[in-house]
Image 1 (cartoon, one colour):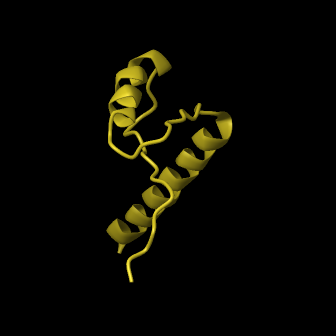
Image 2: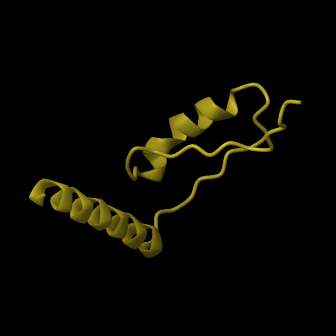
Length: 67
């Protein structure tokens, strides 16, 4: 049996200005079956999570290189 999807999440390569994102949003809205598109504003929590993830990866890479 095939799973039924209720939504998809699109992650941008980097934070971009909301006015620069408008053409992307409009293009996604043109895809058949898309009901709506909601933009999510970058905030300090997402910045901290990104920095912590990068730090964890950096430490793991240095540990591998030191061996």
